[in-house]
Each structure stands twice: as structure tokens, then as C-alpha cells.
Image 1 (cartoon, rainbow, N blue to C red):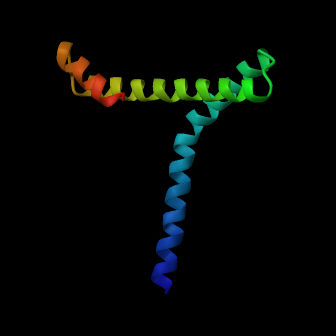
Image 2 (tube, rainbow, N blue to C red):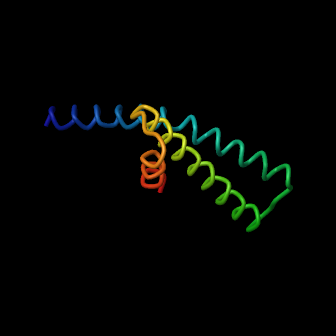
Length: 90
């Protein structure tokens, strides 16, 4: 029983650490999108649609940036890079 509890606690700590690392970018995107929505004085359904679109675009840009970094690490060029980016960023 102690082993199960210890494993559960360690798993929760690992999950919390992972959430903190990725949470910074997500929180920044949320803050940026919220600021834009406020500047546009959006309310209700219009605001919800804007936020959804804004956050989706930010997530897609994060994926593209991560893929670009990986392509650079692999020293991909030309058609090989284009193909990798198309597959990776989907």
C-alpha cells in the first residue's frame, strides 16, 4: 500500500511540474487573447468565438515553432524540410 501511495504522490508531482512548464506559454496566450478581446469590447458569444479562434491560432503557431526548431536541429533543407514541416505541424 505504501508503494502505491508513494507512486501516486510522485506521479502527481510530475504532472504538476509538467503543467507548470507548459502553462507559461498557455497563460501568456490566454492573457494576450483576453487583452485583445477587451480592446475590441467583445461580449458573449462573439467574445467566445474570438477567444476560441485566437487560442487556436496561438496553439498552431506554437506547433509550427516547435517543428521549425526540430527541423533545424535535424539540419533539414529544401523539400525535406517542407515535407517534415507539413507532417509535423498538422
